[in-house]
Length: 384
Image (cartoon, rainbow, N blue to C red):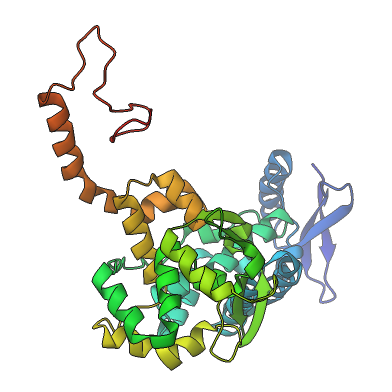
């Protein structure tokens, strides 16, 4: 497809060019071949890419990675949560300024180019987790370049990212939580609430009086308060999922005390001066001292989520129910996060099973009595 013909340079030298038609119907040409054979070889490869739909306009590939990244961020930002937008902005800064990646044209990016950039990130002291976080936007930038016809395929998918070492999950004991709450003094109820509700710190901080139904023992998680660049912002819960959290009598008592005399839109939990609770400030002012006094200086507020999950599983909560109450992105995530805790219940489950099979509760082959075990609900006495 197209034709190959010679042309003469100003110096009088002869060169060859191939003229052809782009997929959009416009004419173009590729020049600079020293021989007709070289031009025809290139034309054959080009014709295959045109026929198979893999052709890209190489002039579009001249856009640098930095230019593409900034454009991607501009388009992406309006749909992002503020915290994610800030994280992506930091990633684009590293794409543009760390190493030489930002100045490389998209059409010349290879897997080795990306590996060199990853090594440059590591040389700045970033952890494997941070490197993976910053690399994910680069993957999207290159995928967008493929979509726009700037490059035929993304070399990112040929690169191996650094592995993140899995750290052992900290699951507080009831005694540890009680000691920390006692050491926190006036803020002890905050620790108790987080431990017995499973809410994230930002969700606790954003909870309003109207989000609490004491008579029904329900908490409605509708918003969160979080810091972005040192500024407090309000937004929907993580993953955009509002949810209903059933709660205990103890939590109801805490909430009753906290909401007494307050207006519906007032915050439930505040500082002693009535200001919103900021995670960073609380860590410095009372949290770190409280957990250190309890003998657990490494605890963060998030470990109370693990405590809640562990306790809920011990009480018989299913992964589906637990994920719903805790606001996880999916049941699969909840299972990866907390499924290992269910192993602790295997011994008691097997002991209970043994008792049922050997104690006369086992049904005959033709009978219908399951000894009080509701097979649909799982181990435990059936409700009648």
